[in-house]
Image (cartoon, one colour):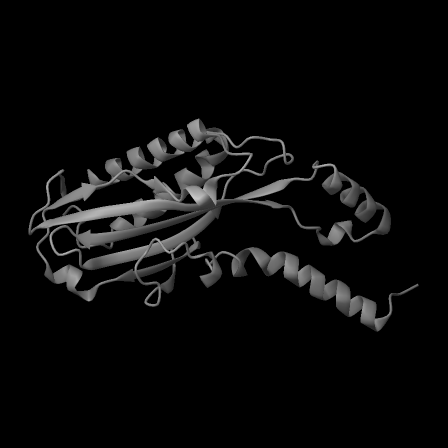
Length: 229
């Protein structure tokens, strides 16, 4: 027996939501801004070569300045937004160190020399893991069958349902002497899915995400005023 017109339209709508959800959810929404950046109003969505979408703003004056060096501060954590039972402090430290290494290695491929002292021709990069959120995996269309829906509900109640790990990253590039904002950015990405609410996040769960970000950073650098000639 064919489904009714209403039921058929409902199935199509649910299918559309599942297929397109990833693209629409890729951009960080205003309610997820951490407050780390002084101003989020200028951010605009930018689609990268990888087809991932980030929010970014670059000060038009950046290209006119003659910056020769850069200070890179260690990535920080918004502690109140990353304190969860599935996050151990030593893992957060490992993630921090991994990001620091990737950013420093990237900086070494530019015309900017690394320094620790402020000056008139020196930029400063400050960044933060703004949040690491654990969300129970939503029901998918294929689970909208009563018996599977029941099983999924039982798993969720027992803490046995998959958890989606979303990582939020924010940065600001400032003039080291005037503190003028030269660039800001916000992005998010998904780490490996955790098996249940008791599974701890590890650095290995973050590796694919951090490697993707590193590739995006390298590609973006090619269109920056600091790329090697």
